Length: 254
Image 1 (cartoon, rainbow, N blue to C red):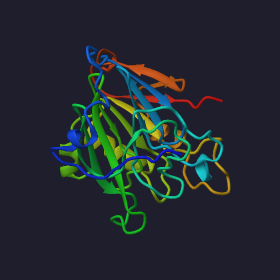
Image 2: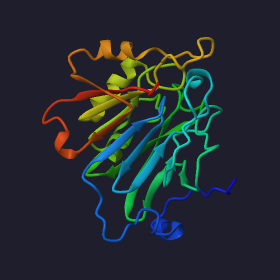
Image 3: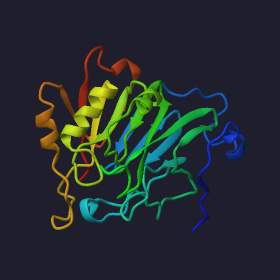
Image 4: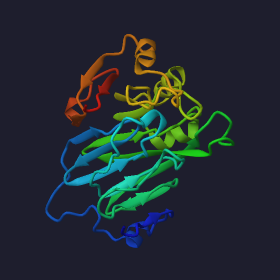
């Protein structure tokens, strides 16, 4: 297997260090929309203007035992945490760039922020830290909370801003938000679109999965409009709700 470049630094010279060609396509402007593909658990592929960003590939085990490995082509892979079942890049095709640490990155003119937050309710002492990924794509502010388990503090709120699309864990367990904690994070960041992640599905090994189903979160969020999509959905700035919030539930392909 090809040796992958694991990016661990963030500086003003980051684009030069990586090479500016990763996202550069001469004569082609970035499309004013983003196609989001759900690959299971907290793993999603974001595509716009020929750019492909994969967030949180995993190893199928425990709560993800019944999912297929998310081995899809991507230009960039962003990882929120690296535990036994999380952040697995085995089997990914090609040689994508990898980001897995907090920092402010500039890749081919695209700014990407990795913002640290605890991956447990003990200040990171049990499972370490999770990275919230925030970037602009297709005219949208996209924020992927990964496996956040701690409240969003003022400093993190300033860095994230107001997301147009926020992917947030809702199933609880020791490493991610419960429905109530997810709701609190949503109230703090006030996103326009909410995509719930990290909840129990039929893919779970019933003896090795300690997270709750999506309905627990949806019941708590009664009153917020819910739109159900397949595993692929295209969103543009013009399709965002003009006021309030909307939950978009994406389904895993069977």
